[in-house]
Image (cartoon, rainbow, N blue to C red; front, side, top):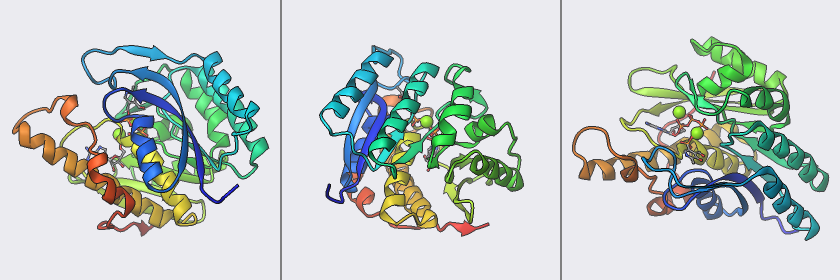
Length: 295
Ligand code: ATP
Ligand code: PLP
Ligand code: MG
Ligand code: MG
């Protein structure tokens, strides 16, 4: 093997736009990663659009694709990334795949984005929660929940920074090496807060709010944090700063471009697709404007 990092990413695919693998693969490739992707669904667009058309990959099909990789001896990966999934069985299958990949590479890093909901609401079936909590979270090297997801997994409410630290500690106790809270409402009117912890040290970073709803940003966050953890030799502070700097640039650019054609009111989804291609140089070399501080 050469020293190119190799990721297996199991996420959704959309024909148009950027969520799941469509928002993870390009940034990872731009940052020098080989990426193999398995598409859990193939939809025309993401699910915030009016019409949803497409296909779901079933478990046997997912298993078969991995079997082909194993048989052809192309199943050596340095990183494994998973996101949005709607069935408990597919998560159990993913747990089996992790164990299989770790037989080939015991140092495999598993990055788990436990996508379940946001702002107090679950948008996947409730039966998913115990499978994340009991099966997948304990296998994760890096976990990237948002505030709500971290509260669901630990059963601990997060009303302030102390609460956040308790939640983070609990996740470490469950076996997670690096805990990253991609967004929390523990900031102020203008800022959300992101947090990253290795158990030894914990950092927080402000995330200036943009007045629009984006889709695919959570998936982009997990991919970027994976990439920057590797590229910085596991410097979580720097990885968090690079990740947030990239997201902030892309989100602001996407927003400004959308606002130019929609001067007021809510912007329809097709105008807020993330401008990834246009921000290729930002992805390659994000300029850090907001620093993370140790807490
Ligand atoms: P997941 O989808 O993984 O469960 P999440 O709910 O945190 O996590 P998002 O809400 O999409 O996912 O946020 C991920 C990142 O995207 C944030 O850390 C932030 O950098 C950026 N982001 C998303 N929406 C906004 C917004 N309205 N204003 C500013 N930044 C945003
Ligand atoms: N719609 C579909 C089909 C998805 O697969 C996803 C995430 O993978 C989303 C919407 C939401 O993406 P995010 O949580 O990154 O905003
Ligand atoms: Mg969110
Ligand atoms: Mg998400």
